[in-house]
Length: 272
Image 1 (tube, rainbow, N blue to C red):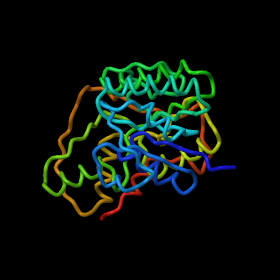
Image 2 (image 1 turned 90 degrees about the vertical axis):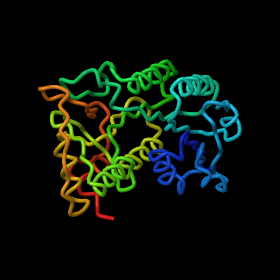
Image 3 (image 1 turned 30 degrees about the vertical axis):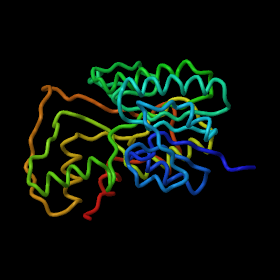
């Protein structure tokens, strides 16, 4: 049998590229890029302008078995691209893995959120993800997986790069003392996605750590791992009570070896 063909939309971004690197040795993997011309020489990468190009052209060219959507960029253009994607999915054998966000629950701050909880968001970003999730929910059963992801860290992640820049320039680091989160890193997230694709899993998955941590504590511990810094913290209080932004797994639990704890994510960060 031929290798399963995978198309990653947004494969030049941090998460999309991490997924590409995880999958490309096992599958016939293609990716889209927009501005980063470093990908232009890679025959597996296709240039795709979210605002100008029609996603159909890319889909017809690659004819993927599996589509991973890690698109970023203009929100109305993302919605249109996903509408076209839904039309394609209904007519083809392909499956979709959509990278969503814990922000689909950011209006609920009193508890962590689980797979079957109702989504509600106060942020524009969270509402975008909900809108696309709702499109996916209308697809025939077994056609898609919604992967809700919390903040993603990792040595080369934008969040860690920004943290290092602030540390090096001695700028204050923003922390949210009352915010309780779960987190993940690029390595574990991509292994989880690989497993879900391999097993043809569909449904809703919360791909974050299986425990919770306060934002301030997490950032301080990561910085302690990054080197001998003496940071200045700027504490941001949005409320006097603890508030949660955490998408925890309850229904769709992954195998033990694919789960991760906040401490493992902290320990993963090393001085460069």
